Image (cartoon, rainbow, N blue to C red; front, top):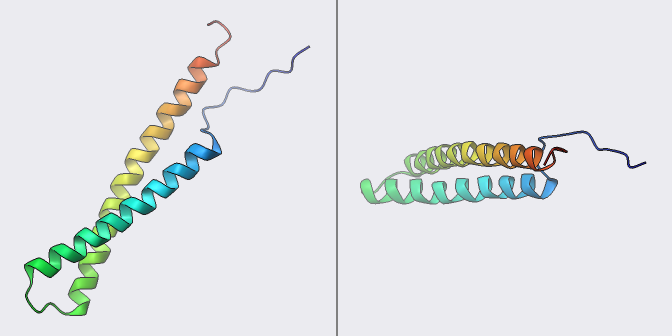
Length: 88
C-alpha cells in the first residue's frame, strides 16, 4: 500500500527561497534608483535627503516585488495541487 501525501498548496522550499532572494534584489535595485533619482533632482542634497530617497525606493520596490512573488508562489501551489489530483 502506498501512503498518500496530503494535498498541499505550499510551494517548495527552493521556490520560497528564490522568492525571498528576488525581494531582496528588488529592494536593492529600488534603493539604488531612489538614491540616484534624488541625487539627480536635488543639487547639493544633504545625506538625510539622499537617505530618504534610498529608503523610500527600497521599501516601494521591495513591497511591489513581494506582491508579485506572493502571486507567483500561490500560482505555483495551485498548479501543483491541480497536477497532483488523482483523477488526472
